[in-house]
Amino acid sequence: MPKNITDHSNLCLHTMTTKPWSLREAIDGYEKAGVPGITVWRQHLEPYGPEEAGKMLRGSGLHVVSLCRGGFFPADTAEGRQANIDDNRKAVDEAVAIGAPLIVLVCGAVPGMPLVEGRKQILDGIAKVLPYAAAANVKLAIEPLHPMYADSRSAVNTLAQANDMVEALASPFLGVTVDVYHLWWDPDLANQIARAGNTIFSFHLCDWRTPTRDILNDRGLMGEGCINLREIRGWVEAQGFSGYDEVEIFSTEYWAGDQAAFVERIKAAYLKHC
Ligand code: ZN
Image (tube, rainbow, N blue to C red; front, side, top):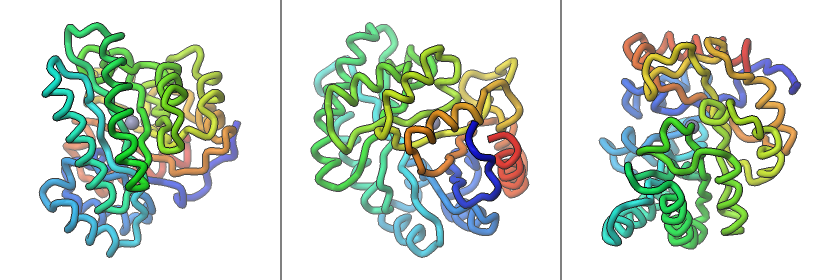
């Protein structure tokens, strides 16, 4: 087991965790709460535009950990696939504008498209974006998604599949994101985290509620569910990972409440359960 967490110096929040807050409110709210890291979702960037958002972030004391999310590569037509590649290049430009060193890739899937074909298109798409990202000094991280999202959100569903892609493209600018919500069930997880080694670029935290009332927007606060959070953090840190612990909670329930109070609950749960 890793060392207990005793302060919030390594804590990062995703703007989606406090979805009702605008980027301005999130920046102010995290700073007030003493949360040092922020991962910015593109939908929170959009109302300001990347230049203005970049100014706001640089003017704050926050550390921009990553931009979420790029990806969604597969499409039924060549035009569709090209549009997706163009959108990912745009995400690279946005990352540069806000000072994000990393873009997290939710790789995409098309309902009805065989998953093997989806993964081929994903690998091809990443290969086409990677030189553009590398030239901009922005890293890309493949985030495998839980298999319940294999129909429409990602054909990459295990860390083994993500590791295969990272090895195939062999670039210092390509790695993986370990998200406990998506990967905790995998009997091969410890081995695959060891295999990923120093290509682990980011680490996402929340918990798995039983029962899960909604497959998208019912993630639990850490400690509310069944995920072996501390053990998985130990596996990740054993690889030399020293990045932020990023709390990413999609929750209709928590979004309905007071966001500043929710941030305080996250801070307490982080110390107690992670
Ligand atoms: Zn995640």
